[in-house]
Image (tube, rainbow, N blue to C red; front, side):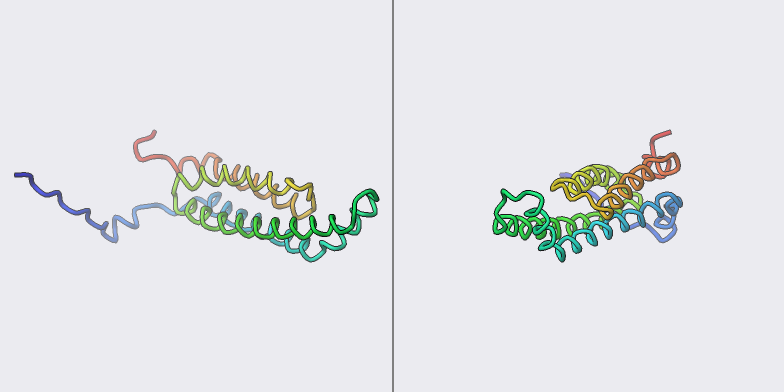
Length: 160
C-alpha cells in the first residue's frame, strides 16, 4: 500500500514576504518597457491617421505606381501596424510586470520580444521618431534587465 503524498502547503505571510523587492534598475526597466509600448502605439496611431497623406506622397515619389494600389497598401499596412503595436504593448506590460516580480523566464521572453519588436518597427520601412524612440527604449530596458544588480535579483537560489 502506498502512502499518499501531502498536498503542497501555502507559504505563510512571513515566508511570502521573504522575497526582497526588485532593485531600482528592475523597477525602472518596467516603466521603460511601458514607455516603449506607448511610443509604438502612438506611432502606429499617427500612421493610421495619416495613411492617406503617406499614400499621396508615395504616388508623388513613384509616379509609376497606381494610387488605388498605394491606398490599399497604406490601409492594410496601417491596420497591421496598429494591431501589432497594441499586441506588443500588451506583451510588454504582462512580461515586464512578471519580470518586476522576479520571474526569470519573463526576462528572457522580454529579450526575445524586444528583438522582434525592434525589427517590427522597421519591417515596413516606417522609420519615424516614435519608432526610433520605441526601439531605443526597448534596447535600454533589455540592458537594464541584464545589468549587475538585476542579475543578482534573478539569480537562482542555488547559484553563487
